[in-house]
Image (tube, rainbow, N blue to C red):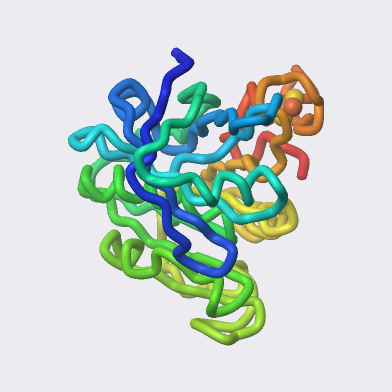
Length: 251
Ligand code: FES
């Protein structure tokens, strides 16, 4: 159930170019959030809340981690919050990833840019349940890369950069032939990347998160509407997603 809570900022730091990591404390959110969900933050002086995906969940310490890119005045403001302050938050929002794969199976995580964070929370949960985790992460360039070591702790990790300044050069789809067999894939990133991934992995079981295309996050602005192959036709990413079956949506 979505609740309005106050989350205390425990830390905030820049971890890559234009990318900030903030650790927030709240018992309710940490105990109820699942990978793939997002929180809805109301910043001081603003009227609209901002949806930000959850990158890590730590129930023991009652915290969650969010990672975001400075893309406008809202995220710029969020990147300046200081430790000890509190944020007005609604959450956890949206439908998370299904995590029903069994011990001994293999999942492939494919993240692009700021679509990488939700892949981490998911991979961590699967690793704890002895599911094999293979990750392919795409970034613009070396200075945008983050969480490489954290993903390596989960399993085999391939880094790809658009300009080849770090890892392999190209797009995530260029290295999918190097990942071996898997039972289910999960992907989050820009729409063109998801389109390429779902086309490349056509016929394989997969789930995608379209969180990058969210606006208001509450079903009011229609910025997130997308066509699907289901009876319902159009669906809203913020309310019906952000996670969908890879074969269900028309990208
Ligand atoms: Fe505004 Fe979904 S983000 S309706």
